[in-house]
Image (tube, rainbow, N blue to C red; front, side, top):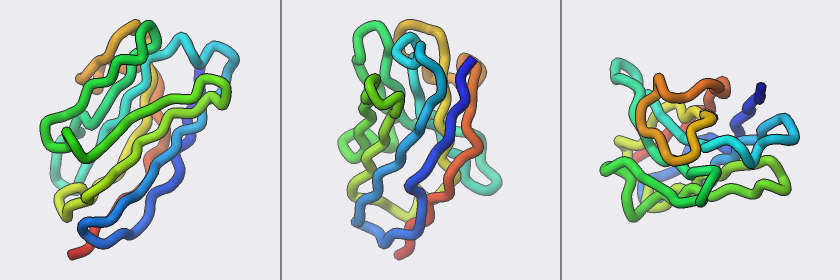
Length: 124
């Protein structure tokens, strides 16, 4: 089992940057593929990014490609989401998730563990 706690959310102006962190419990963190999802009011949960545990290859949702970067530090049991060139449509609650799949997954139902989320608000 793993517990996930997100941090780093907040208010930022359009065009700005923000870095989210997700701290995971357990000594087997490196065995989990990690993902970021987001959900805006009235919208379905959307895939943002994922990084595999077997190869650390990343995958991104179309709406964030070229702007967001996912990374992991297994020694710190932490996954990050660097968000640059933020847009108003990036406003959402961002969730960290973990799955035992060895490579990137893009569907929320493919993930087994979830954090409580952190709010990101992008102003115009």
